[in-house]
Image (cartoon, rainbow, N blue to C red; front, side, top):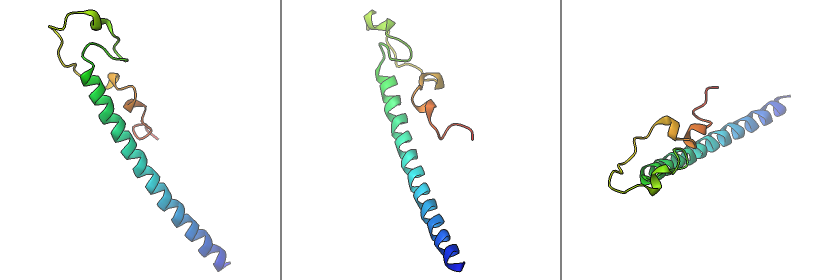
Length: 85
């Protein structure tokens, strides 16, 4: 019985270590998504996938960097880390 217990205990330790590693990898991926999404939204002054491209055909004179809101972030808002358990 003690052998089984020790075996299960080792397996549990391995699984917990793997889970921690995967969680860190997921967090790094989601950070990268957030950074790339921010760059896209800031660079797409004429329009973007979440706001549309209506300003694309308008004059370049009045284009300013857009103010980013949480509603604009369709990719990073889908994060599994941001969702409540």
